[in-house]
Image (tube, rainbow, N blue to C red; front, top):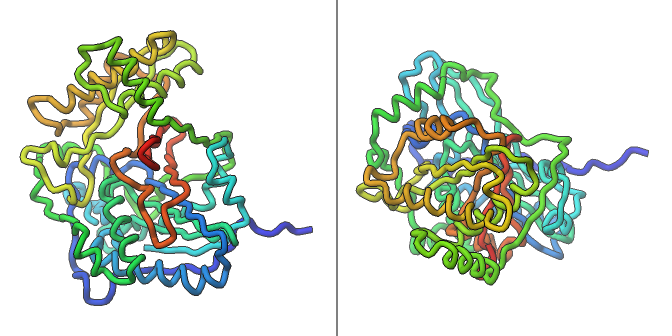
Length: 422
């Protein structure tokens, strides 16, 4: 007997801003912050919303049309999400410049996917869209940057999966876009967003570092981009599982007290640093004695000189990286050691007299001069961005998830679902 498909495609749409709202000839040059991510894997984000009585009819006749309508209006203000990345492979000196939506029905278990217990990663991959194919146009290659998939779980809820090139923007940019989209989806127009929201800032003159732009552009090797270009995608089967571990506010406070007691002179102790230190030390206990790296991004907007607007569209990230031998991270003092390394390095980045803008490649080369790490761990996301507050009119998401395309780097994701958890 033939089994039913796990996923059924109900509709495939290509969306754009309303007519005559965006200049068709406009383009947005990439800064050195964007160029750093040119060869990075895409960013995948998945939201689950609980709707116990949702039917296929309501999904196709109400939810999908409303999402399409509100997304089109949102793209008017966040037009790069509807564009393509333009790369000139035959002329590397020319800087690269800047939506598909799919509706599906799933037979997967909504409650299983939104729980905290370990599950096969492959289950989630079906809910996350691929980006469109690259195409050759005249002397440049055009690469789609954004795609959305909305999936129905009959009588349980919906999921919204998103994929975008990191070159398009960082988490702050994605959150600004999603905040605008959810606001417009709830009201049906952009009046409320324009009255209470913040329009994106596209001024590229705010970020100007020709030396880093030239260096990053050379490293990007744009001459290798052609119509066969395919960004790395999530795929299975895999031997990986995904689970969620919750650190409550009381647990975090106890961790901070431990660090402050053992290291009273440590200048930077925060919920973020102790949470990262705790998890890093826990994971270290599962490995043999080896050299391992830990890193995370730092939003540079407010830390630039002069500061740039929080609504700046694009990437504006610096890096904070450190390495340690596994033996230092285990034992009774392993957590405190990890928190100390993270706190000291973050304090150094934030107080550097030369500012937060550094050549990240040079930083990595300097770090790796001490040896090549066997394991790399990174943090994706930040509790400062309230992704759990994104409401399309169905209430807050029951669960949000991020998925790395890399198979060599272990990622932590730090959403803040409420005031007591991280």
